[in-house]
Image 1 (cartoon, one colour):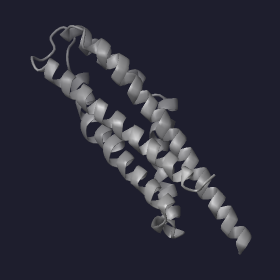
Image 2: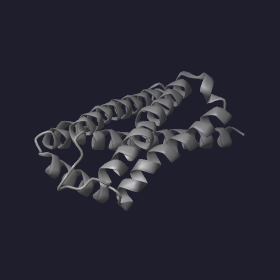
Image 3: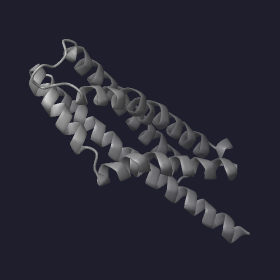
Image 4: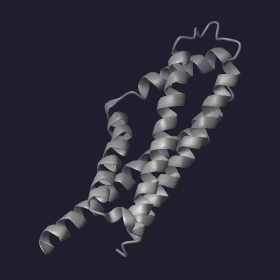
Length: 169
């Protein structure tokens, strides 16, 4: 029984560590956008913005991004199930980790699914030769929500690391 408990504890630490790594990768990805790509997009004309955003939105849909993006949801959610079923949700470790999962799901994944994807789908319909009059408003809204999901990804990452640190490892 003790050996089973040790193995399940090691599994949880591994899962939380992988969750932290994936959240860290996504936080870095969104951060890079916030401090470089978004700034470059702000300098473009309407037609150039449309063309560049359409290219970015096509190129980002690749296998590596997909694995990290969805892995940063699937691994923590699966880990959260393990944490809850083991009863670790009552510990500081469990509470920090579950808070990180919640922040990531709402602030990063939720924002992407409910805000960015619909906006990206709208941008995909624009003609670079005649973008809509509200293109600058869309650009500002897209940038603002990217900053929000960046912050959420970093907060989640920090909570995952704090959960691991709370174990005294």
